[in-house]
Length: 144
Image 1: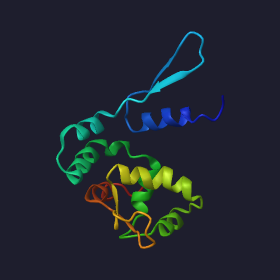
Image 2: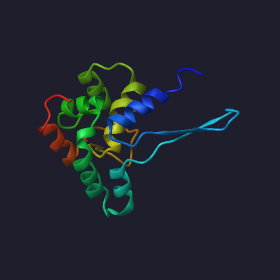
Image 3: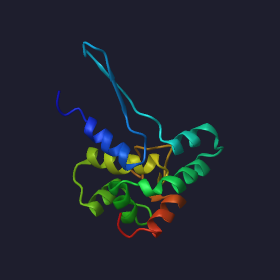
Image 4: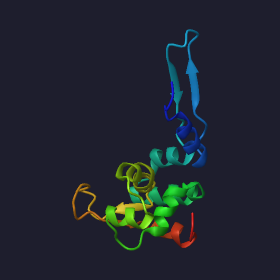
């Protein structure tokens, strides 16, 4: 089997400081199972921090050394409030799905970037801006 994406998963998990994935199969090898352990900071976040904003800041404060190069580039490029198209142009990226999967979604999920209209994610008026945690990261990094 080729092009399974497993090597990308392994690299991404190593880059963000997550525990290594675990692989399991049976003797006949008709299947394999991959366990992707939760990053310890994400687990702490999920277990008890009260507000989403506080939780994102808490996790970000401890995991910012693990911001991927792609997300770092986005954070440095993000100036004020910008549309998806403006961000893609600033980063010289043409493929929308690649941009969403590799840059924007991880930045949003990590709490470093937020939507201006979170209740309408598909709005033509949607813009993106740095959160306080994103601003702190960007202030300390001119390049990822």
